[in-house]
Image (cartoon, rainbow, N blue to C red; front, side, top):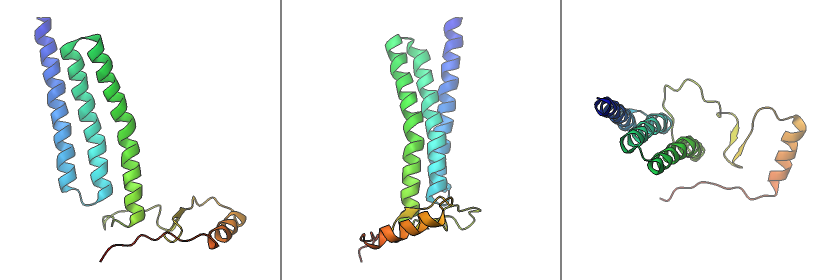
Length: 147
């Protein structure tokens, strides 16, 4: 009786995991730009993997397998958002176009493409002048494409 209930719970976790992974895959294919695609793949993909690892923990019931599954869950939950943030930021700075119906672009007037500096908006006039004078002597980094 208990084995049947546990098997149903495992099947539910695996089915839910598959659904979230499918949603992540559809989101990657259907969403319009890099940022929304990464949002779908990170959120739904991480939840899908976490649910799958919970099903693995329940299925095997071994302490070593449980520890490894928990380690996988923690690794995915820590690294997926950080990687998505880094990729999204790099894509924005390189100039990957964002969706035309994007409502808010908070980096629009804060990023200097010539010096690759990102301002927070809380700088004082003295700090802004110091940044301008400090970057005069340094070579500019430009992103170019091969033709």
